[in-house]
Amino acid sequence: MKTIAFSGWIGLLLVPGLAAAQKAPQTHELRASPATVHRGFFDASLKPVLTIDSGDIVRLETASGNPRYFESLGVPKARIPAELYAVFEGVEDEGRGDHTLNGPIAIRGAEPGDMLEVRIRSVDVRLPIAGQSFVPNRGLLPEDYPYGRARVLWIDLTRRTIEYAPGVEVPVKPFWGVIGVAPPSTMGRVPSGPPNVFGGNLDNPSLGAGSTLYLPVHVLGALLSIGDGHAAQGYGEVCLSAVETSLKGEIQVVLHKGASIRWPRAETPTHYITMGLHPDLNEAAKIATREMIDFIVANKKLSRDDAYMLLSAAMDLVVTQAVDGTKAIHAMLPKGIFR
Image (cartoon, rainbow, N blue to C red; front, side, top):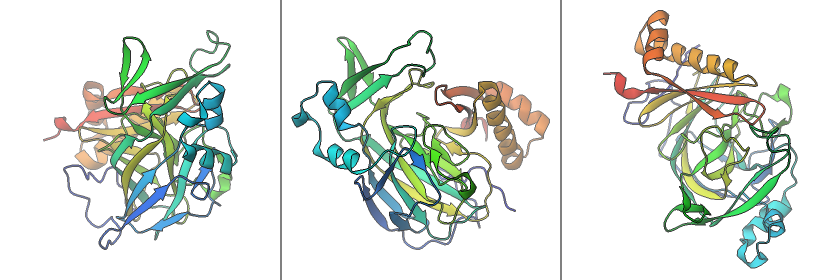
């Protein structure tokens, strides 16, 4: 079985022979609606709402923010986009986590043992309203915050900032918190809250515009879903939620036949990224580090001993999130160290 870590589309050449045969890419539209989203879960039995070929481009508009939640916080109905009512009241929440996901998208020819490359060509905020909250018994500090709090946040779409308080502004840095394929059919319906081998709720701020995510395929068609828009999030996502909002953007999906990876991987223009997912952060760190060692040995022709020492000199381990039950660490290795 062929293995691949990163196909290196950003400023590099795709590894020959692995990408599925492509024709001229087609561009598709996928806007959030009751007919195109599912909420709170992944499931291999879901029927695709869109079928594409490898190399095709999908323009997305995703929806985040329950309008009744905004109303309960005192937002006049006239200030809440009507499309949110249509999406949230037309789709039942069937899992843990308030993730409204566009999809699934089937990729022709995808089957278990393949790899999906998801290029984030663009992503941006599209509505000015956002929300954030913490709840009892969740987050990094449940003993300090045994109660819940929710708030509405307004995004200045022109200045690209979020005002938290007078004199406190957070810059907009959008990304989708959830990008995942269907889990193996043996897992059944899986809540969207914890990330897993199929990706899902990765909550990684590094996966913004210009990044690429690589996912192992577990079922025919792969069945890619995307959503959980974040206008901003710090690494760790310590209170449980980011600045949750609706996004727009464009992805390109490339299928790699017979390219086997065990865990999601990624890259940005400047870094290679491997990911570790586990309830224990130490174990997550070990997974991410072993994944990076495997990549270095396979792609940079170093011994495992030299790779281990190189990572101690040049790799950063980052807490992606520590609040979703299954915690996440990602390892970041700068591309600039390789000539």
